[in-house]
Length: 164
Image: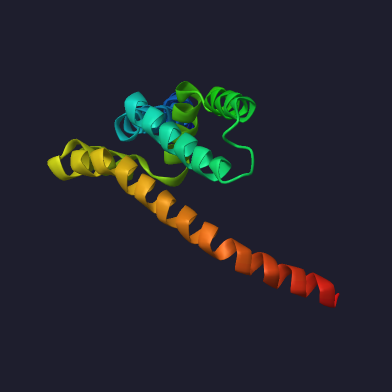
């Protein structure tokens, strides 16, 4: 009888513990998601996201300006329309959700906490402040190089296609 009582107590204890332990992963995931959203907001504030979009638009405008007829009023309207459409495709709230989801996917909760602490630090804030400028400079350098190399690359491509 005593063994039966011990087994019964064990089963009750296990049954009572199961919902709590089943809830633990859900709690941890919710905490990780909350941290990921906070980190996403910290790493890309809306002002900075708008600066990224400005850099994309600037890069597109520079590329389109090299096309024949790009200075016409019609072409300028088309460029402005394209820029509005690109902004509409990438609203801040959706980008924030995407970024937060990716943070939660690739980082553990302790890593997210560490990243958050870093970006709250003076060096982290400086990194966040300079990232758009660095990105803009990289994009400009890549674009300059592509424009310079594109004619050569096109000739090489044409020669390769002619051999086939």
